[in-house]
Image: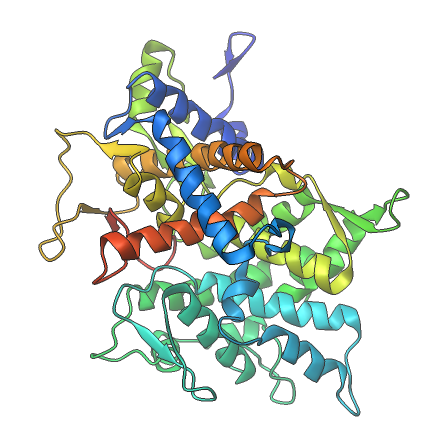
Amino acid sequence: MSVLGNTIPTWETAAYLRTLPAIRERCGRVHELAKKGGLQYFEYHPEKEVDVAKFCIDLMKRDYGEDFTSIKPHGRWRHLDTSILRVEPLLSKWSSHPTNAPDVKEQARRTVDLFLVSVLLDAGAGSTWKYTEKSTGLTFSRSEGLGVASVHMFESGLFSSDPDQPYRVDAAALEKVTAEKVASAMQVSESNPMVGIEGRASLLSNLSKALKTSPQFFGVDGRPGNVIDFLETQGKPDSSNSKFTIPIAALWSALIDGLNPIWPSRISLGRVSLGDVWPCPALKAQAGSTFQEGDDLVPFHKLTQWLTYSLIEVLERNLGWKLEGVEDMTGLPEYRNGGLLVDLGVLTLKLNHDLPKDPKSGLPRVRPSHPAIVEWRAMTVIELDRIADLIRTQLNLSPSQLTLAQVLEGATWKGGREIAKLKRPETGGPPIEIESDGTIF
């Protein structure tokens, strides 16, 4: 990378890699390589994309008939409401309090508090862990189980330092959260093991530090919900529809910068910790002598994007705000969306790959930092755009009529889970297993 023949400073590259547009642009570079057969681990079969689109459309028609506009956006709200409504009853409970009913903005702050900790707890839990909800007797696993468990952790006041107000999250309380407390609340035991329990607890502990060090976003009391007050200073009324409009870049900045201290230290560039950004050796090999430091790095920021999608819904539904620039968001590069592409043949591992196999499942099993996973995730980001376009074309819908967030919710993420259950009924896991530490997937 250079400007007028001069090398771009590494700190500028680092800043760029932490923006939303960088995700699609860098993943696009990997996708271009795939077209030429230049990936190290995967072969790309674009002719199979129509099969994925058909599979997704069949799912959408099964679940929504022809009413595709009724598909809710992909976000944490869906998981928290698994089987029964949990978020709306909380909002109703707060608003109908006989003596101390919070206003709409405070209700939104509380919802942001809940969603933020819930998203951070939403990394792969493994194929054996389950959570049983005492009030209903229902049992959940994976993302739904983590979501339902987080609601009850929130209601119990685990994340609040105010004994008179359990429905909040603040730095003082998070400081005291331990792996043992998280394990107990998540019903983890020898017979009900969870992957990455230490990583999850560490994220919450680090969240305490992040909230305290960014009062401009989270207030002097270090509360996630205070980001609403920051966003209010960044928005303006939209004269065309009378809605208060917030640029997505403002929300992204608060999350990517304000929460940067929570992520484990992995890769840094120009003394900037990059977060969910990884090297792709195939990009470096392709660059040859023109390679500049940072050219091989591919950003994903999966959990931050998942959080952004989730908070967009809170801001729109609770406050009636409008987010501008949402088209910069990408599909989420995780194992459900990516698994769909592998299971339906858009991506196949090269025959001479050297990935180690899990002794039990016989499936490839590697760490998130492995070049194969970086290629898989980058391809997933661009393929989700392509699949969404195919679905819209076949249904004669525009991007505004069927958003990427709706495609993720009603088609690709669900499709990845369903095809996994068909192909691997014992676990329902992905076709490539990832050694999760509870902080990425």
